[in-house]
Amino acid sequence: MSAVGFGAAFCTTFALVPQVLKAWRSRSTADVSMGWIAVLSTGTLLWFIYGVMGNDAPLITANATSFVLAAAILVLKLRHG
Image 1 (cartoon, rainbow, N blue to C red):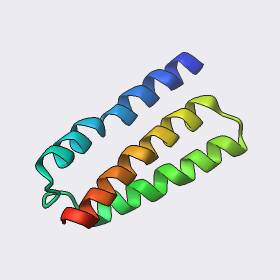
Image 2 (image 1 turned 90 degrees about the vertical axis):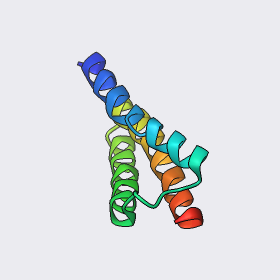
Image 3 (image 1 turned 90 degrees about the horizontal axis):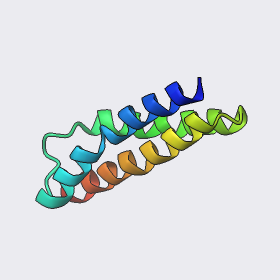
């Protein structure tokens, strides 16, 4: 079951990578919704906390990584709007 969890975590987490790279390279986040990235960042942080509370490695790993990626997009959005 952990293999399925880690597989799902990999897919959903690394789905953010192309957006981070595009925003980083172009210095433009005009097409990124502030509401979406703020809610996603908050949600991944809460899922991370939930994973820590339940000692669930796939949740912890996926959501720690997702939070860093989403927060990077959020910071770029705040800087480059």
